[in-house]
Length: 333
Image (cartoon, rainbow, N blue to C red; front, side, top):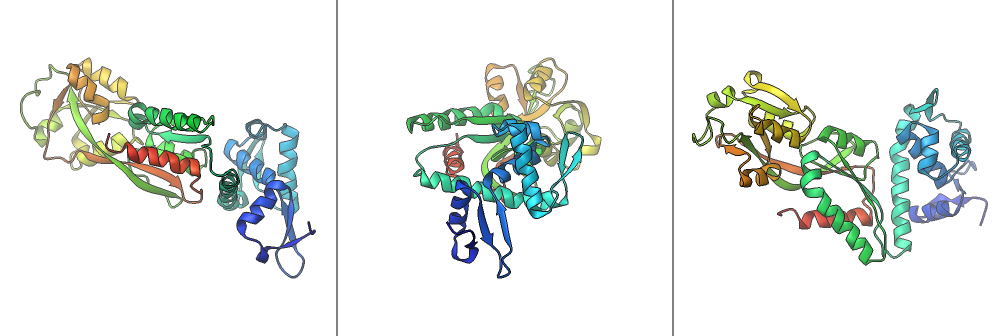
């Protein structure tokens, strides 16, 4: 191989392929200025950015701490550019690192896709999936099982790491490249994230079966204001939809309790501590067995949507495409 390569005569995929093999020189201009880096250095940079600790990053990549430290030090020295602020054992991205991180992540995503192409797209790889509580508890697990079963049928062993949290936390994990995709209950707007509608949902007002307003017909706003509400925490998609449905009444609502888990809210309702708005997915079985009862307020809009959320700079891999196909096949179930 020549000592340097003219980048004008290389496609991006071939540059990545050569990086996969080892280091290459890329001639940037006629002055002979070259840059040298490897995918290993980029991997270490990204892992350190995520973990903010070189020891944890090294463990994640199955490297020794000295090897990871050396790769990161060489990357910075080669360009005379510091990428992190050192705060004891903690490494935090500085302005240079923040600016370069999306390009580095895009390069790694393209490299992973190229590797899949060389393997004939035969297998399904590991995925890191985030889901909000309602989706994680009532929709995501069967999808994980189906994905892993599809991989086994192809002779592969694929793992899906499922992280369950509220909408804000999942979106920020996607933003920080900690997740490949998020399945969220509410809208989340950020210039570096892209959202895509997945499926529709509906909130139901549920109460203890002995509540005095059960079987009283549709509730008006005055009756809604008279209720003691048990709500999800701020930052959750359910709380967002609840506040949207009751717009105009929020300052006067009696929020008696905030809980982070749907099951805890259902137990509180059964103990007659208040009423709540929860996803139809979460309360259908309880309504059927009679441990909860539904209140109706049809003049309010209780509809909402579930979304996929992706990082704009992260390529959609073959594995992620397969996951999306499974989700779309189940959108009406």
